[in-house]
Image 1 (tube, chains in turn red, cyan):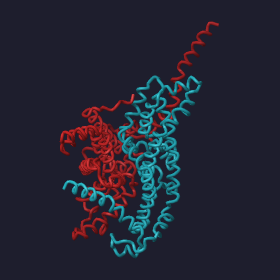
Image 2 (cartoon, chains in turn green, blue):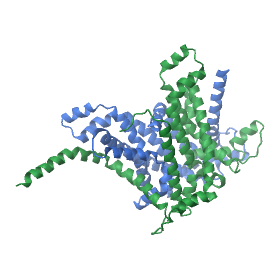
Image 3 (tube, chains in turn blue, cyan):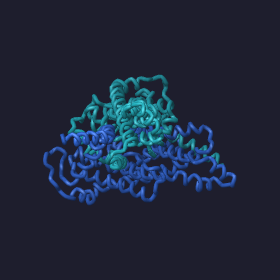
Image 4 (tube, helix red, strand yellow):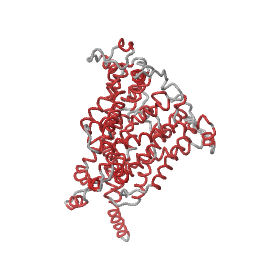
Length: 302
Length: 270
């Protein structure tokens, strides 16, 4: 008999806790997927990076920091970082161009929507199609050579075969493909600046440069810092375009292509994981730096 | 002068964007003989020569590729919406222990670039027996879309809690509230997610390439990629294949322009 109140208390407590339980039920699927496909891989990747695992053998050996040591001491593994620099420079060119076109198109312009659409559309095109389009563009006697020949320029240049040119050509493709996103982000930010500010500025007789410097620039700061982050992490994780266009051969080998090849072609799962951990750490570090340097005014999510 | 500069720069940019696309289109209409002539910029002799498209479509297995892409799109988008709206509902409308921890788990995950973890994700997918099945991309697309959860979450904040309470007083269960109050009001956010997710999944190459090497499971990206071998020298067929892949994107873009701009802006700045 004495257990009755206790049992009643238990059920009352359960009833009180039910909203708790219900919340977890709604979260279950999302959390299960998040843990299975993000946190488990990250954790196991860190573990593999300290082993010599080949991807199949049942018992990998613990090797300490040796994979990381190799990564930074073998020049042929290290050189992929220099390839990233090409893409990094290209993405800054891309940001500047996108900013220019966003500012230009934020003023009234003939065929404004047409220009906007044309600049943005490449971003939506399938990456494999983009790669084929530019294989044709850069091949001998292809689009680029024909246009140059039209202007009387005959270079005979191997745009994708010449080690000095291949990364320039490939990062050019990346500018062509991704400029549209930066551009639309900038344009959206500029257009969300209150019209009164523009009017006040023109009443005060501000020049275009002054309008840009004091009204547009502060308005796009958050998007600009986001673009810089995307540029840096993007140039470290280039994969698709060079993989399809050159197979990552020779000078065009990027960090991610190298990692994928180490893991799936050469069965060096441990070394590949160490490379992936380094890349992840760099991206997290850069993001953290950005959050520190450019404090956000956005409302937080909690 | 500055006006002239402005239009000149815009026209130059438009030419740079369009020229590679236009030449591919012209090439797709040429015969092998015309190709042999080597005039890349020449117009095709017969503007209705669609034989390359037929070759690309039949020999390039484009029909099964479009079917596979459609299946994956259907499942991964509806899964993302269902899972994402439910998660956002729990986070925004319930108070529970470890809520902050859960939110930060999602937040930190947005910082992890997908390409970096594939080496290890591959082992997980393999261990679950999903390698070389359509479930691998479907689950990965559903599981890695944290941006969608954020879009839902942000939108859900704008839905007054008084609506939930009114329904609760009428005796509605929490699921009923989700189903008939929240979900219908989330429609604009759902539309945004459908658009960004749809285009991202349609264009993705890495995941199907890594997880579905079997030729029967080719999606449009991987099937187009396989053109490289058999059609290696036949640029007119490869071009036709590329145009076939781009065409649906172009149609969607022209029809839904405004939603697409807004969607990608919301997705990137989340």
